Structures are given as structure tokens and as C-alpha cells.
Length: 86
Image (cartoon, rainbow, N blue to C red; front, top):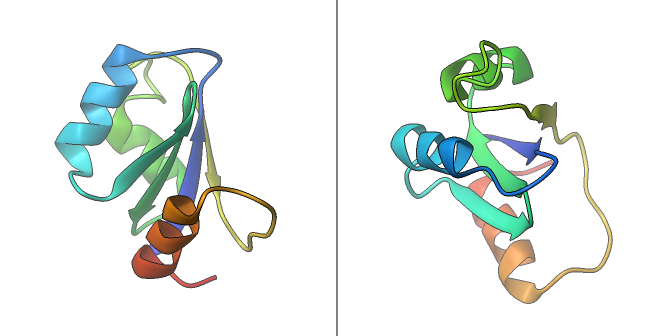
């Protein structure tokens, strides 16, 4: 599976509900309005599935993660390692 970063400007209950519906067990909240998801397809397909494209789950940006590096809590690194390789 590929990893995607989802970014919204603020908390978004509709987007969270869509993540829970379409990617159960394959999403992780990393900050306010920020999630990682593991899925297949393109960023556009993920956006369409979540309802971002048409606005039913509010506004957001979907980015395909091509690589990652930095500092975060261990649970984030472990989740990324278990869900996808980049």
C-alpha cells in the first residue's frame, strides 16, 4: 500500500467520518486536521473516495508520500513502517 498525507485547515468531523468509513484501520491522526492513510490508487482517487473533491467531507489536500524523514512519536514511525514502504 502507498502512504498518503491528508491535510485540512482545522478539525473536520465529516472528513474523519469518511476516513473511518473508507479506510478503517488504515488511517492515523497525526495532528489537528492531519492524518496519514494507507491505500491504493492516486491522490485524486483518494480525494474522490473521501469526498474531498466534491466537498461532501469538507476541504482538504491529499498528498502521495514519496519519502519521509523527521522527528515524531514512535507510534507514527511504527504505523508507517507497518502500512507501507517508501
